[in-house]
Amino acid sequence: MQSQLDAQAVSILNNNDRGGFTIPTARLYPYQWNWDSAFIALGLATIDRQRAWRELTMLIDGQTADGMIPSILFRNDNPDYFPGPSVWQTTASSLPTTGISQPPVLASMILTLVRRDQAEGLGQARLLFDAVLNWHRWYHRCRTPVGCPVVCTVHPWETGRDNSPDWALGLSSMQIDPDIGPYQRKDIEHADPSQRPSQEEYDKYLTIVKFGRDHNWDQATLTNQGPFLMADPGIHFILLRADRDLLELATLLHRFDAVPEIETWIETAIAGTDYLWNDRLKAFCARDVRSGQFANGFSNASPLCFYAGVGSEGQQRQTLDHLKRIRGLTKFGHPSWDPQAPRFDSQRYWCGPIWPQMNYLIATGLNEQGETELAARLRLDLRQLIELSGFYECFDPLTGSGCIGRDFSWTAALWLAWAS
Ligand code: 2M8
Image (cartoon, rainbow, N blue to C red; front, side, top):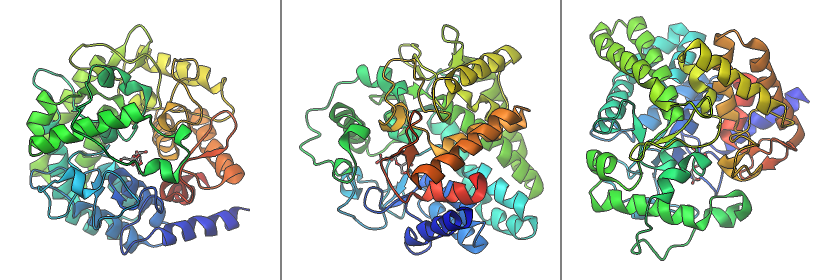
């Protein structure tokens, strides 16, 4: 069984190769995506290290002049996907791209590759270091709203957790721009609409895109005056971890010039972490920056405090209590949304399904904090989910059935790099 699944995972990565970069899955997501590529590189490194580094180098090709690495790189205009390059209309990169970013896992995946193979890895990491440093600078500079203690996000798509109930607060205070439409969604032609975001959510996603386009993708304007502004435990914890990993890379590469700046980011992020602590729920939650209100559920970003190595003893204990409580409610763990919270939906994308890459990050953090049993269960769960249902984009935590995209690259990559 294992070697058969290994072979299947390799063939998925090969079939999704588009000439040096790997798409998440055919038709539904036919371009290079930012954090997908970082996870894909982990899997590629187990079969072809050169290809793993090429994947990351091609991701950097989309970097904008001010340092952002966009969420999607449009190397062509593919009719299977909406919204494509003609909707985003960006000009800041040499490639057409989106005007927003994605969770910055790249530095951490580079460090993981370097640790596996220092001899070759350091040389490759040296070539990527300045691009990643500039991207982190961009996040700290352009996504920290005036007067806010943490880095924030301007679009649910930027968080990678698109229709998480976390974003309901920010979206509910937005008006749909009547000039966005008409448009034709493509996602619901390739996937079951009941597992995808609602039409109202899409209208609001496109309202934010229109705002960015109308303001020539000026990132300070988008952050401070845009229609949506929320603090995300996902981006906060992932960036804090990535800053720590970038610091280690700077030391390994003797880039001591970058050290003081990175150390300042880490100190600022640690000091700002309590901003995300929802004392009513006893968990780290998303927060609407303008109203100060917290989202009302434990997501799969909430336990990333372990991955970031942050949170008081009490906060970490209460986070563990949530993880264990939720584990008792589902057949497989850890779902993207608390089954006891409003809006849980076991098959609707980020409202319940299990996401392989998130569980990899959660388990990495738990392991590092000594919670090895919980971490091992997450890994075993992913193995069983893949054995049961195949290489899906995400999985129903109650039944284990696969949801949305098939032959999915990050699932195949994490099988090879972690779960198998
Ligand atoms: C999903 O997001 C894209 C938009 O970026 C979409 O639904 O069209 C998310 O799950 C995101 O996290 C992921 O990177 C992307 C490609 O797998 O798909």
